[in-house]
Length: 221
Length: 229
Image 1 (cartoon, chains in turn blue, red):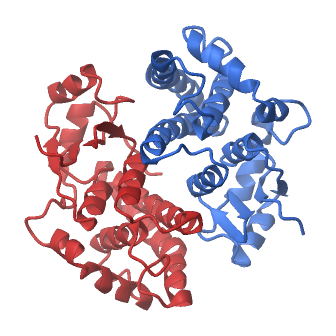
Image 2 (cartoon, each protein chain N blue to C red; image 1 turned 90 degrees about the vertical axis):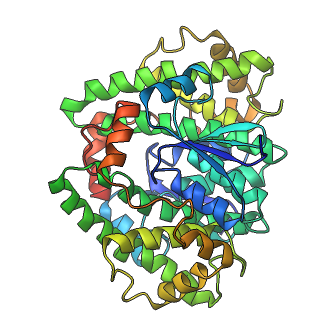
């Protein structure tokens, strides 16, 4: 038994991906236990491992943590990626919550029924380019620093990079109007732990393929 | 101008209600500006007060905070309702995540059609009684303490009470079978700041009605055709 955190989820991005990013960014090695079929989820539910019968679940520091935000907050707090005081935390939380809203749109796209896909895509691109990206472009432009908050690398930077890359997968020229975000993307991608995570062979998961969607749905429904 | 926090939202529960509860629990007085018209909302937007063009927004300590979770975390930490260390915070975050999900099923209830309301009611009761209440019942039973985390009053207790009362409004006997939660409800309701908040005349908002739904739709020009989750 190692002391490494152990992630319980299916072998795909979903709601676990930001957790993989944050652990990787913090330079923390982790193990993964992949659910392949419904029985795997039922087993976890039956043995009392899932507080609300749901995954993500992360075994870390003697806890079986659930709730994505709780897990991310704990990792960020433990590895000093959560700002230096209450006010920096407030800024980080505001930014990160907004990113999670955008992340919901991005991660749910492959799971949309065929007749809703186009509208969902249009809405996602609209929110990304008119609501969220302009804010982060302005924050970075206004203070001219490399990192979003407190002139220091934090979870907000990790999560923003993740979102920017996912948005580009969705629409490759989506950052065309955002030169500062493009520079941010290049800079944060070069942070050594992040650079490593972006290389092939890391635990980063690929985009959700349509053909695998039914298999994923079968685990949960 | 007072140093009191100022809440910008509709005159109704929605996502702001948890903020009202937490401030009240902490004994913090606050002011409210209610959105009634589209013009008010556009004025806030144009003034740059809403970072992501959304409410809730709370002016507090020189910040215009948005994102409900961020606001609640800030208040909880500032007023020592967030546990004493990282591990207690982890537990609080987990518990609050659960009650947030549960209240999320109720949040859009007033916007649904009559037929969908019936279906959603069944979902709310099922989730409450088979997923969420059993979890909190077990937590309280296992440690036998008065509060959810660290033997100390915290944000988790306030949020759970809020959720319990909300579900009870939908089904008054929903706590039968959950004796720990019954006792918890009585205990937390009698904490002086909470007791005060539960009395008529407080800033607690009533169950949303059609007028509330109309106002939200008019101001935001959204949520016309909501379907249950």
